[in-house]
Image (cartoon, rainbow, N blue to C red; front, side):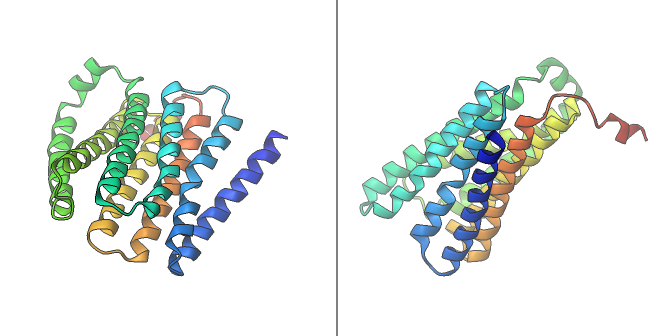
Length: 242
């Protein structure tokens, strides 16, 4: 019965991905947005059905992300600047909280003394790179978002995302197992999805950017789901030794 429920939900997820693409091409942006907004909530349901040992932080990430995804449809019914700004702040704050919970999930298995001792150079290089990326993203967004409080939201959003990607990489290097690898790939996909989405919203609203962003988005949650179902066993050491 559980398997049947999961298969049905997975079939719906695939249908929603196809529906998103078709309606996006046809210019039916409301229906397309509704299709995309249901993908993560359904993946979350699959997670609740199939994963027995649930992490409180990872579960919180999925739940908060699902709430914010479902709320994206509301923007089509808001017709004032104040309402849109309020929606932007609330929606992105929920996303930020979700990413913070995922960041905690990444950090919980790290020994910080050993990490800072063994990865000083890597962390320094990544910190400089992150500062540059945040600067470039804000430079792209600033001409469009001229309200200071919205810029701060965007700034915090980008910083949390890049911290997530940085420590997901360090986490994989430190623990060197399949579970952390899947988590890192998921973080990599979702961060690049966010970058492409910035290009779609603020540079060029072309369908190919939206498709690519959504594809990476779905792939990210696929890897997150695999991460949640994988036990923490070191399995990749032999690749280095061979």
